[in-house]
Every structure is written in C-alpha cells, then in structure tokens.
Length: 191
Image (cartoon, rainbow, N blue to C red; front, top):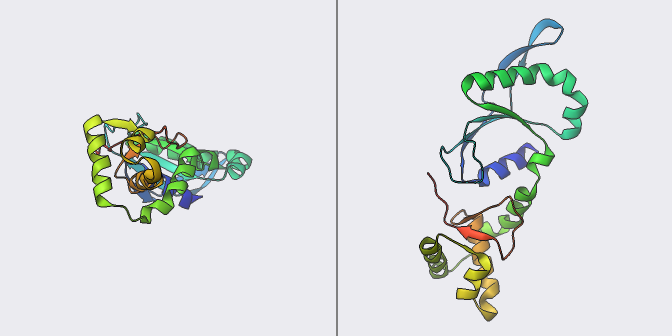
C-alpha cells in the first residue's frame, strides 16, 4: 500500500517532495510507562499557491495503514498518533492517516490506466499541435481536441497521444474524476 501511495502522490503536479520516515518521535502509551519510538511513513510537501484541486498546501505527515488494521488497533495506536499530530501542528504541518480508501481511489485507477502510455512513442509534431492549442485556449475537452485534429481513422492515434501527454505530465486534468473523452485538459502550471 505504501508503494501505491508513492505512485499516487508522485503523479500530482502540486506535490513538491516526499520523504520516507522523516522523523522519529517518542511517545508513551496512555497508561504512562516507558517511551517508545514512532516513525511516521512520509512527509509530503506541496508547491505553495498551486492552482490544483487541493487548497491546502501545508506539508503533511502521513501514516499509511490498511483500514482493517487501524480500525482494530486505533486505541492501541492512538498515543503515537496523538504525538504525531501534536508534532505536526508544532511544525505548521498536518498529520493524516491514509488507508486504501484514500489511496486506491479514482485518481489511483486513472494513474494506473495511464501508466502504459508513459512509454508510448508519440509524433512530436502532433504533440506540438496539441500543446499549442491548449496554450492558446487555456483548456479544452479531449473530444474537442480529437475532433479538431484527429478525425476519422486518426482518432485512436490522437487519444493515445493525449493519454501519453497526461501520463508524462506534459498536460494535466482533474485526475480525481473518471477519465473520458469529455475530460478537460490543460497545460500544468508549476507555480
């Protein structure tokens, strides 16, 4: 599940960096006693002021746990998560627990669907035409681009090109919504 979290987060253009096991914290269980170490899984930092789908650009301390595990053990683990939340707040961050519902969502399915297109050979001239159109218009639905430049027998080639441009992050879309020919695409802003 951690690998899927990484794959998902690496796709988002507003994610600036991910650091695995960024900090080691000490905590005591609710009954007191000895201290124990706790190392959250990731620290994710974001591009500030990014115009993407997320409004919050504060760094996020993340624990990745299967839903079944954390729901069965939340009482036992609440002490370490409280310390992580407190530490994150002190740093100006947030603390979040990611399970399969947060990781393996529509965005993740779209990212998996686009993955084979990362290695596609595309005609650089076709790519230049699509990028110019999006640069001039700001954004356009995929079916508009296909109708305008890839009619008839060339529609499949045009769609493969668009999937490749999305997979390689040359263009962007709302990856959290199901991908279709009505999906709006644009050139990403790396602010």
